[in-house]
Each structure stands twice: as C-alpha cells, then as structure tokens.
Length: 119
Image (cartoon, rainbow, N blue to C red; front, side):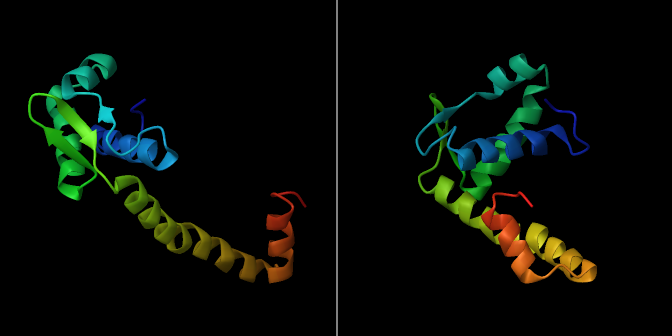
C-alpha cells in the first residue's frame, strides 16, 4: 500500500482523506487505531500517530479518549470542497493550456466530455 515517494504518514493521511471523500468513511465513523495500522501495514505506530495528528489538526478527525479516532462532522463536505477547488487549478488548468497549444477547440472538448470521454 505504501509504495509512493512521499513519507508513509502522508500516504496514510491521504488515504484516509480519500476514503472520506469517496464515502467509504462518513462523519462519525471510527477509523483504525494507530496500533491497528501498525499491525496491518507493518509500520511503526508513531508513523500512524503522526498521520492522525495531522488529520486532527486539520479538523478531519477527532479523538474520543479511551474510544478512538472518528471522522469529524462536516469533514466529508469540507474535503470535497477543497478537492473541487484544487481540481480546477491543479488538473484542469494544465489540460486546458495543453488543449490551447494543440489547437483543440472548446466545442471539441465539450463534445468529448458529453460523450463520456469517447471521441
């Protein structure tokens, strides 16, 4: 699972964010404990704890003492909103710039989108 170039704690935090955005985790759902992460993925518990600390600081997770970590209310909507914003600037803007360089007309892009990615 953790084969990217980023530190493992970032990959864990990104995976939890992705699970929330996709609906696999919802507000109020409990996430695996640091011990469960360490055991399941054979990593240092401190690595998982660092990921959880980052998510708690962002307000994505909250800790209930003696019970565990849970997805915060509003986290799914907030994460989706943040991803929508970054989608345009980080993904779509470069694609549109490339399309302009290639002389692809806006009508051609719309036709492609409307056909579900088919020419």
